[in-house]
Amino acid sequence: MALGFAPRDGRSRRLVAVIECSLNQNARDAGAASYPAVNKAVLRLCLRYDVGIVQIPCPEMRFLGLARQRPPGKSIRDVLDTPAGCQCCLVISRDLANTLRDYQNNGCRLLAILGGNPQSPGCAVHLQCGTADPGRLAVESGVLMRILQEELHKQGVDVPFRGMRDCHPEWLNEDLRWLEALFRDA
Image (cartoon, rainbow, N blue to C red; front, top):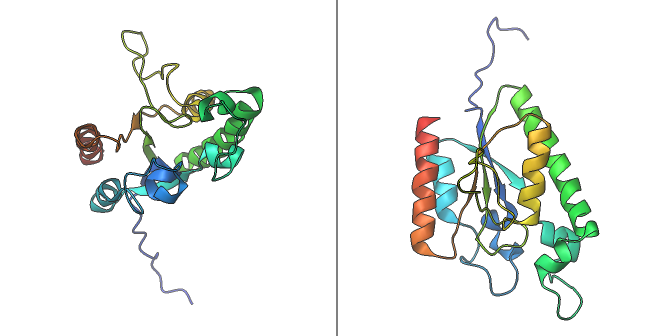
């Protein structure tokens, strides 16, 4: 049934990749949730500016399960920052990088990678200071974020990383102002 016109495509073709626990606080380690369900402030900004969301799987849950089972005396970071933990993060990163590259190849604009709180073993975002590459993640960043940035770089995807630091209201407000400016200017 050809009507002689193309259907309207309402997509904004803009998106961000957001860590799982920002979209589902149930994914957080016991005692680490800031909200009952979702970081509504981040979600509201995405809705207000018509920015789609790609969920970044939780590396801690993938590697250790929801309860984060690990040997006594070992932190989540200790266990995640091992060859096996890094391999898990690499699998997540390759899959996500391929997905994000596919979006870009099909006319979508990736605006940012939204990571987590400063102490997150997998998803903390700490930028290097005083380097020739100011967007480069520092070693203090989460294991997944560092590996993801490397994988995106290999695929020619240059995108800002930013932690949505909901563990502290003033930090989160700073991050939300940054995100809103990014959305407004995109």
